[in-house]
Image (cartoon, rainbow, N blue to C red; front, side):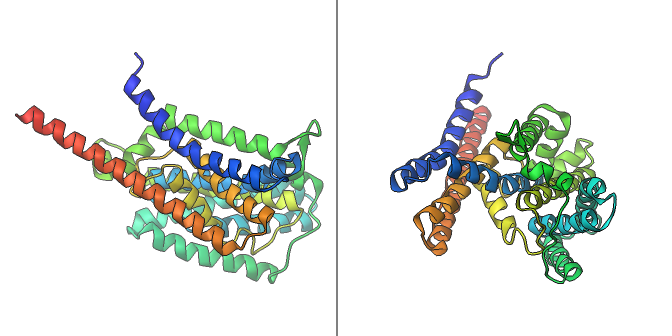
Length: 330
């Protein structure tokens, strides 16, 4: 049976998420003659690919009620190490990609294990991880770019299917569709939401809360590695200082897209729209030659507005629940 109230609620929520990028795109189309050109729109989509994949990992983690500040550092570290392998080893071009994915998964597991084993707040663990892996990436390369990457290594990031559709966009679409289906249609997705809503209740229900939290960090680490591979492939080089501050952009996109700071809420559809909003603002700044300071201010205002709207919605639902409960008691 179709739940019409649920359909109307989701329709209102997604319409609110679609509105900001739509308005920004409309304004830019009037303010810049270059915005709607195929070249600019193509570059916009390609440039947001890595951020969108990283934000996908952040979304899984935030839904489970945790945070991850090591996103960009893991992205850069895995890309630099796998690119170095691809350049220096005879079989590096073939081994570089699985090596990066395994490295990302291992770092994600380490973050999740430290958080769950020692009950250290995720912000503290991932802040330390951010400093460590960024520092190691810079140390291993001496701050230099790893260039001369083989074509096989660069293929996912720079190739085009039939000479038209970028392979990286296809990878992005497949990951988001699979991830959204996982969150909304599988037991594992239900468990992630349950842990984020109320970890204690999830434990009493027999769910392995610590294991679930470790797993979302593993998923996040793999996605960060994929984002790093695509970024390196697109530019043809791996930079140890790449994706600086991307963790804040990705987290902001997840919040704009509906992720609750306390966990238990969020979707990949919303996160993608959040990434699109942030990317449109950056693209508009480039086209209109605006100062980055102003765009940063606008992005901050949008994040605050999203949080205010979300908080009001939560308070309204709580009042409705309390009112319904009091009516039943009477």
